[in-house]
Length: 153
Image (tube, rainbow, N blue to C red):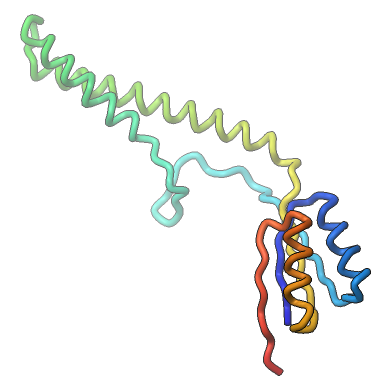
């Protein structure tokens, strides 16, 4: 049986490995994952998207500003249509700028986390009778996730 577990880089993974070795399990393999080396891109492309949109606030503010502009346009010189379009354009630009600035600030906060260590995958080969005990030990040492696989010879 193979047991897979993921851990944060912490003393708990060392404790789990030590406890497993004390129980007689010697076939333990730990794989640290690499950190991301390049900065995330601000704008999406056709082939890659991170699921965030930079136009949501722009469209929301465009609707609000166009309604205000059109209603005020009845008493202004150019009329409600022009002032509604001016309000929509200015609301969209303001919302887009707010989204871009917010995304840049969030990205700069994530860049500060570059020194953070990524996760470690722990692979343990054990007998099927030891599976439950190994799983319990991993959970007690704060594993992020555990999976068991029965291997057929």
